[in-house]
Image 1 (cartoon, rainbow, N blue to C red):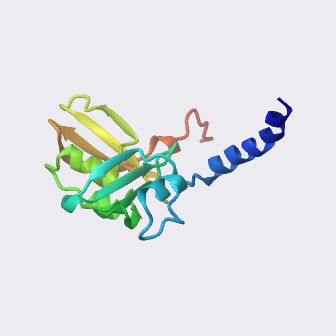
Image 2: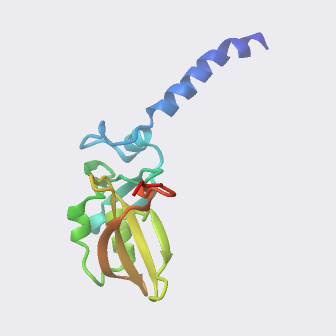
Image 3: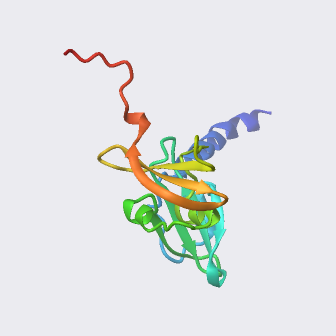
Length: 166
């Protein structure tokens, strides 16, 4: 029984260090690493996507505000080819009308918010991203395909019940 108590501090230290090993971004991810090594560094992926040619893509959507989603591309052997942060204006602007939502999800990861289109049919998918203007990107999704898209003010930046002197 006393030997178990002597090991307890060592076991706790291992648990704490392994929890700290999970990083927010893929800064330490390098080409040639295995998918298991990436998962060890970044934690469990939010999704795994198949790529043409037999490769794969590990998705790491970060939050809680959802400003970053990292995609790690893997070759057919499961080795890292590279990684990128996909929530960017360049990527949003490259989304065409009529794109299937499964492809949108593979390109950008999960939306921050999905809501009914209101008077319009379908849904509106909203993506937060790192923007100096505190914007988010929104796209209409109707019958499983993208429609119109635009940038708008991110509601997290709105000031509620502000009393402004006249």
